[in-house]
Length: 143
Image (tube, rainbow, N blue to C red; front, side, top):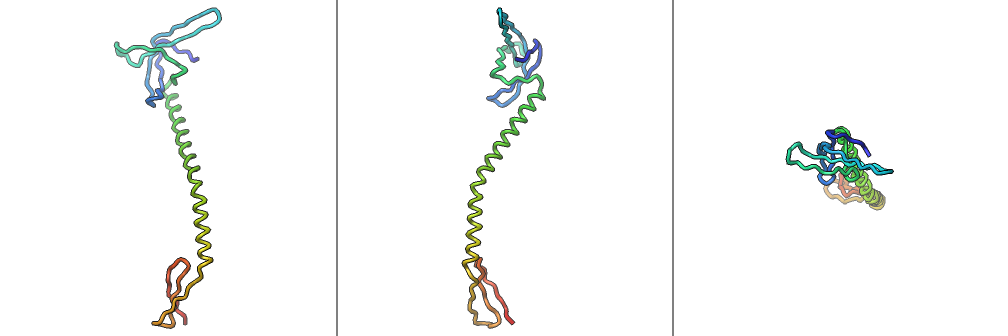
């Protein structure tokens, strides 16, 4: 467990609220027994005289000794969350790969199966209308 000094300012990451708040160590209580020593710290979140102190639970609370450490922690958490979102998106996108491949195959089959269709024209014998595999009709002039 990290040691703090009375009067030291620390920063607490509040998981529920997703915010960082400054706190001051206002009391250190050391319990010594024959073979063990236990240290408890009490903090307060405001300099207001009515502000009550509470015991710091370093197992539950994420405690930082500098604001830069808290910033780094939050940036890493944000980066991890963004990476997870992108990974989930990539995994979800794979379902479309088979749809695209199937669509491309069916378009290729349509091109192979549908021959060019000659459409009779009666106005000008030098111009022929042809229906392409994609359904488009074009005029072809022969000399």
